[in-house]
Amino acid sequence: MVVAPERPAAPILRVSGLHKTFPVKLGFFKRGAVSAVDGVTFDVYPGETLGIVGESGCGKSTTARLILRLIDPTSGEIMFDGQDARAINRLVMYRGIQMVFQDPYSSVNPRMSIGENIAFPMKVHGFDSDKMQERVATLLRRVGLHPNHASYFPHQMSGGQLQRVNIARALALEPKVVICDEPVSALDKSIQAQVLNLLKDLQQQLNLTYVFISHDLNVVEYMSDRVLVMYLGQVVESCGSDELYQQPLHPYTRVLLSSIPNTDPDERASLDQSLGDRTGEIPSPLNPPSGCRFRTRCPSAMDVCAQERPAMRQPTPAHDVACFLYESEVPVHA
Image (cartoon, rainbow, N blue to C red; front, side, top):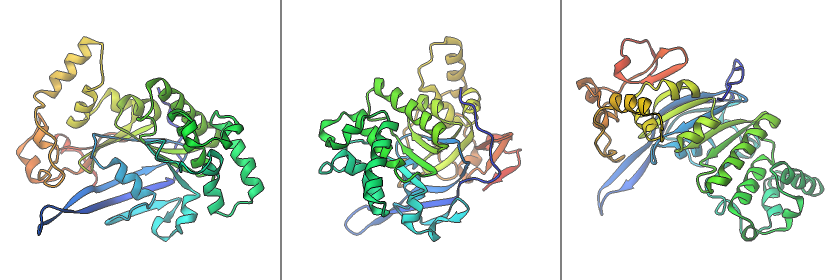
């Protein structure tokens, strides 16, 4: 069970109405567009872990890259530490926000030693060379590696060791926020738990704030204080981790949770009965359904679901859901 930290008054990261559209080529003359992120809004508070979960292609990783300004949004606002991210110099912003990517091998420069890979952000930011070497040794120890590993090259290390190197590099500039984009999905199960425990220990030691992205619901439950559920570029549900797993409200969230192996036959039967018939393919992002994008797969779909996009509502305190089943509730935001 994850115990949420006491929430400060102001979020360290605020995302409002975020949109990202990518142009696509449909033929020799025909062009189209994919709305990868469509109106995403959320806050992240200092010291907490916000999990973002959903099927592949739902816009999780695109959202992460927008926050880090690796790509520019089509519209919307990102506020970091009370400032508009667009007004912050990128180098200054990267001292506050860093990212741990999914693939530990492609995330490092194979021609540079482990020490050089970790020291690279510090070099870009003008750190003294003597201090860099000392800090590299400290960071290696902090992530459970030996300072002698600084002289190794990436091909001499395992995937789990390399992901620890990537975590060390992400911490090199002492960021406040670390975005973890599927950080353990490429690792063996036996190594995943070690890396997850390392991330939790580092959060406690350094008072880090995480945005943790994964398609693995068990991992998200273990790591997160709050969870954001995305479907085809939109947020459909958001609440505390414990409440989401014990009382999911959106039909899509229940579909996701039904994929988790459950040895309790009564709980499994109850969930399956509530889901009803969930046949249907995931719609193409090039031509998403009108209104609620989940309606073509939803056992509770109504006529209004095809006509309007459901507003985010709050049936219980701090539990937001975008679904017409809760139409009587007061909207939180459009």
